[in-house]
Image (tube, rainbow, N blue to C red; front, side, top):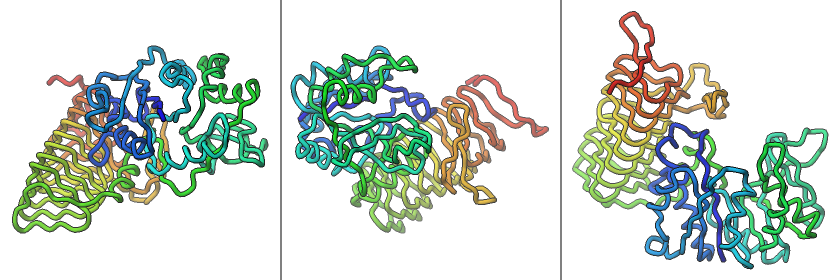
Length: 430
């Protein structure tokens, strides 16, 4: 069977993480997000994949190539030239799919790989023209809600219904299986009031005009996450690290203590006095320590230096340096970051309330009691900088010595505190 993955979007809600890479290439537990999906699809029997790409597509193509050598699965690409909605994107797959059945999904999902086998088996048993995966949600008004008839087939699709409509609480989970009839429905789909071709409208046409059936599949116990907000990367990392099998491939000096499942890649040196608690992933060619304290649910990619400091429940991308007396908790540090000695990130409010983060100029409650900072690629801090919880620092920015960061810092600026305690922002001169 074939699969089609929609992976063209820019991932604006994840910026600055996606300022230099597309969302499918965000590394989690040693692999890009999309690679975890491709491996799961392969295990489910998928033999060919079409990636609908757009934003920074060359990076995706360079990494996955044709798929044969890395995964023994054939990967093809089509570029979505205009972003005109999910039905428009799915329509690109018509020639690739032909008359076959296929799995369709969004490229920003991370799910338990068993879910792919389950939806395929459900689809085959249903003898329907389509399948839609569903999740129970507590706030139906924020989702597209799917109502099923007593036989388990889709009866109605309602976008963000008010409570008085009583449309239930089953939300679209973004994994589908269809036969080729869906393309007839896409061809009949007209632009919505958002001026986009909506895939939910195509499904309505399939049911009402083409007399097709779409069976619902409720996801109950399998892990599912749509990686749309920064802290969801931390949750996905925790899920993957819980499945990690420890393996020590690097060089471990004397007087190093390692507990739990810890993976340490080739070329990594762990120096004396370091303490590493699993689950934890440490990639290749890193220097850890001396006297580093790496706590559970930390993922460190390649070519980093984590020195005499403490890191917990965080993602650290490649070529990042956290060398001297730093604290990093519940945070994401992108690639090519350099932290000055004594830089620390707060991850907890004094009042223990949940932490909010600004997403596209709107404060969004993370629901998390502990959440640190997001530091964008190619940024650096001076000595003794302090970053408050829930703050973001844009790419290519510099935080001055002894500066308190209590607001989001834009990209490409020098942000510092002058001798009078006033915050200054100037274009990055370096």
